[in-house]
Length: 442
Picture 1: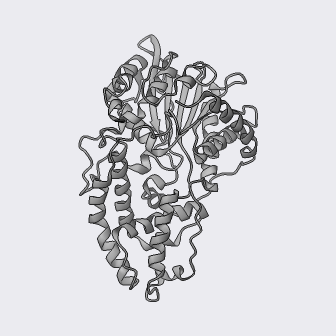
Picture 2: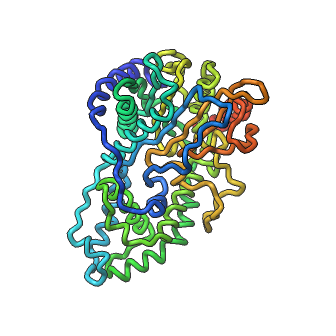
């Protein structure tokens, strides 16, 4: 469990840092590609609304909002950055004179940073803050501002701060929410998947698909660049360069031109498999890593104390200062892996059949660019609805603005469930993963 003194220090630091970030008031620009191409970048796709936001059904009023949002676009992680540079160097060391699409490499210098947000990613979060103020302004007044938390990675904290700045900007500085809690990733954290060391990986499934789609690409590039000796893994790294350079430079990367739309569709499926078998339904210990957040969500929706024995920090969640139950808007900032676990713990995007590592199912709803793009978001709305003369509490969930079907709690097509039915449907979370949590550690 995280030390309570450290939490207080982090809270105070966030208040100081927020003043600096509040000066950012720009909008995420176009990246120069059509949306279809950008969507084939999977979890590295820029955020876009999957559907136009639909107001609640007639007779329903929103009374509470719970936002869960991924950090904005970032540079590659340190380990990935090393691999990218190695693959680029192999291609640069080859004969590039015969293929015009490769000549840019003759004067190319790798210049990507590591781990942190790129300016485009900061702008994505700022934009989101403006959208959410505009959409849910009726829930806000001077005494009831959004309660904001973030996992402690720098890119997540900065995303939260840019969101608060965008929210304040949209209200003409009338409502200025602060980042109230930063949860250390070295301890119990419902906004990071760091507490299940025994969880397996997706290596088997992703390797199978890589061996199917990458060899032809490697052969093509090796013929165009004699001496490169690119492997399947190199192909993957060179494909990663396309989204990472594009979001970093806010302009199309020349690496994107090395691959066709169809090849990037295969790349997208590689990442679908990675998440499905890494943190989703295909991983036995994937959904249990989302249980802590789900139990916090249930506490907020019902106004009852958190009941959880998995990831939650009991010190934080038992205090009305660090886990209030009287707010109308909650905003949490996290990572894509944790969001995948949370979707799976709730029962969203359930597939009739496991994803096939040898062939994509074109009818699947498990598609990374729709689930966890950069700055992707899940919103759980609590509603007060009058149905057949009876007024009660209801719930609906939107992922990237698309209303999610929730047959598991009685949704008959409107995307709305009675709150009590939704709570009952979350037995997996309420029972702490039904034994799965105990398997996370020896």
